[in-house]
Amino acid sequence: MSDVFDPDKRSDIMQKVRSKGNKSTEIKLIEVFRLLHIVGWKRNYPVKGHPDFVFPKKHVAVFVDGCFWHGHDCRNTRPADNKEYWERKRARNIQHDKEITELFQSRGWYVLRIWECELKKKNREILLNKLKEAGLLQKCD
Image (tube, rainbow, N blue to C red; front, top):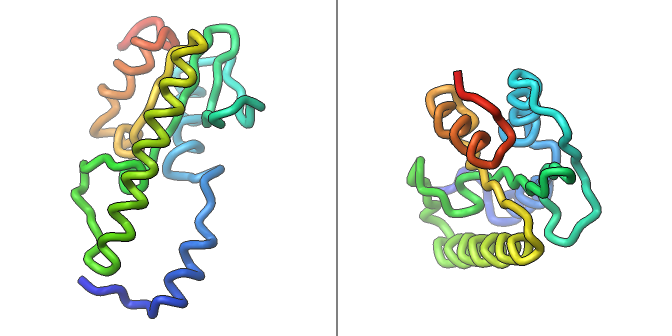
């Protein structure tokens, strides 16, 4: 399927995409934290690597990654237009994620990466297991 917008309009649209406060990721995870009574998290924590959430007392850094932007193929969505650009963009994001994960782990932090698709109800068990493994959830009901 080709893009319905011309390249200038698509560029303008993409420039308006912001990485903070995304309802499909960070805001949804806040709802999960509240539902499960998970406390002790902070946002906008001033540390290199910019995790979406940190649990300073537990040394847990949480990154909520959009599936398309960070290379998860759950939906197998790949744009046909400007294919090489998007492949390079995703490859850079994947490499950056790996470097940031290693940076936090070298500091003694546990890194929890949550995929956007894991926030959906059908994948909730995966999310619960990740939260439990990170020591953020005491039990899975």
